[in-house]
Amino acid sequence: MKKLLSLALAVIMVLTVLPLSAYAKEDEDAPIIQFWTLSALTEDGSSIAEAGDKVLVSVYVYDNVKVESVSMRIDSYLDGKNRNIDLIYNETTKLYERELNITADTTAGMWNISQILATDTSGNYMYASGLQDYYFYVKGTITDENVKLLGGTSHMYTSYAIKPDVEVTYKGLTLSEGIDYKVSYKNNTNVGTATLTVKGIGAFGGTFVRQFKITPCNVFTVTLSNDSYVYNRKVKNPKVTVKSGKRTVGKANYTVKYQKGRKLVGRYFVSVKMKNNYKGSRKVYFTVKPKNVSSFKGTVVKGGFRVEWKKQTVQTTGYQIQYSTEKSINYKPKYILVKSNKTVKRKIKAKGKKYYFRIRTYKTVNGKKIYSKWSKTKIVKAK
Image 1 (tube, rainbow, N blue to C red):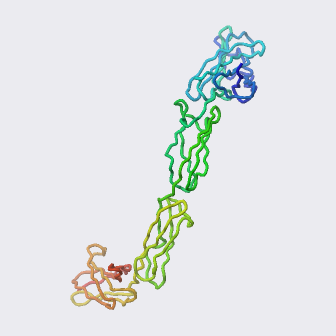
Image 2 (tube, rainbow, N blue to C red):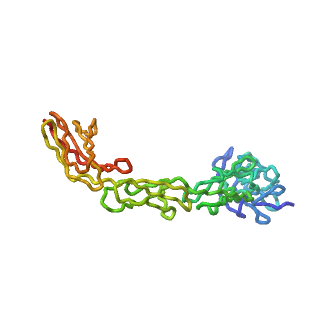
Image 3 (cartoon, rainbow, N blue to C red):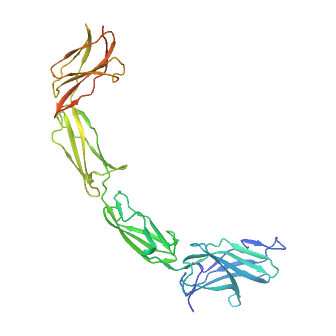
């Protein structure tokens, strides 16, 4: 005879002296039958059945009247199927019990007792439910064909442990993580080959192992602490910040190279090359601008006004003047380019209006003009 398997992990568990639910056709004030215990017995301590095994289900009924029948319903959580079983009284064990044959087509997974129903000879009946602690397992085996690795077998480095999702099915039914299987990962943080393992638990045996790649991250941005400086005879060394998404990348993951010079007026680059769990390189630029004039003024003269300023010759090619009749000086402005850094004044033809004006220096480097910041705007009223 095949081994007998338990409904649960316990041996004998007391439900209650009084029934969980009781109904009588003629007298609803008093229960007719009381369930005393529901027992789960094993022969060898195992609670997992497979095809060819028999599972013994049994219940003790307090028999204060003549019992006509006792039945039990068991449910498969995996596919929702249920079976109603008529129990037979055993004079030797004093239990209502039945041996269930486990066949090859029995749904794998947990089978749980959902209800017990007892009826007396007068047609009065009583049932107990809420018996989730009483169950037995029917064995299933997880193989490669049951596991689908979601998201592919290659993932970009993120600085966090990478845990690809899996979908596990059995005969078309979706299994539940933590009930039917557990997932573990190894070497799944840094660039290289990681391992994912799906191991059957509960009713399910079998182990599925799959490797996946973690590739270097090439998605990152590089910024400088300052992308604009004013010439002051000192070498400029802006600080570098590298981010991947919202994460700041540690300095150990890249090297920084500054373009030579970085003191005179001009445009310079900083080169960043990634390493370790990152790959790729970036060039970012900053500018050293000429110093602006220290002072300037506007004087009304015949036929217009004259702009005068203090000479600024260091790292400067010339000057640019902007003026407009609008308070918002950038609205339809006019410009005058002064090409000599030794020039210190320029007359502007104007008549009978208020003019807004400002000045800045520039230096020509490699054929391109690099301007200082604009001075503050001043006002003059031409005659």
